[in-house]
Length: 473
Image (cartoon, rainbow, N blue to C red; front, side, top):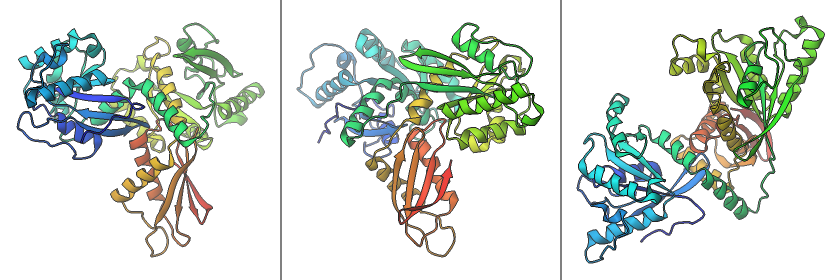
């Protein structure tokens, strides 16, 4: 029986010629072996509908029958005389309704004439073309990724590389899907809040605090983001003594940027004005939602940087690490430098890193986009049904680990009690003791499933409604 699509959720359709791995991808994304997978072309007839939830956005996904020709992509009438015609007609109906189309191709087979013909049909239909992503499947190793460049010839944009069978690249693909369905996220949030009869939290603005040690380029960053010289920039440390607030509207959101004085742990060695500036910087951090921690990537990370990160986390602020002065780095390997930073700051491996040059403007434009994403996930509120479903999945993967005593603990309840920032409560038996590593495990699984990018997650473990331990992950 066909599952009725919930109109309040976006719909993603998997399409392409036969035997390119559409059903395998469907199963991988839904995490269920719902669709029948075989090497026989045309195995899928009735389209399979499933649900996916990623980074707080639930959406429907449909595995359509393999397209046999361009009839399903045109406005031509399709007769219902045989099974193939019916499957093609049904596939077209889902393509019409879909918010996003994943056009799957087989990287091992390479670019075939059937792919070219179907791509041409998608391009002729302007409605399809605007919502189509090319997905190169069966890329079982990143070494094979360059071979997918041939699919640029389809004229449908950049091909995204995955292996549906092994799961390689599917997480990145889900990130792209959620990004493309951004407007759907807002619609879902409103629908879920209405269902729970919970008033949405009013967040009139996103407050960003630019913070860091002296002379790392904080003021230069503010000027680069704004596109004009809002604050004085000088190589002299502590040039900025007072927080500088600047308001702007970006993509419909009100954003407040605060440039603060450089913060050092050795406050006693600073002058009176510098000390006052540092205190104001910390107060600005208290009022902010997100800290943009600016580092001079050309200099080694210091103990003071780590302490500053602790100040940010202890205050429950979201964090984006801005690695500045990227233009003077000789070996610009982002993976290498990301590993170096996370090695030194392993306790905030959830914080995104953006490499920029405030001086040249390189990659500065990505900071506000990243900030809006972090702000949205900071406000994310999971319903009780979502946390209950999540708990069942987590316990199935890994049973709760005991702390003191011999009795294995049992988790009776897990729910979100607050957002902005997110706070959760985990309730165990009155005589149970839960090992702290399991709480960290729960926090990590929360991030994998729901995102909370750049935001600390606080989990309180309670016994008989009395909290005894709080973890900040």
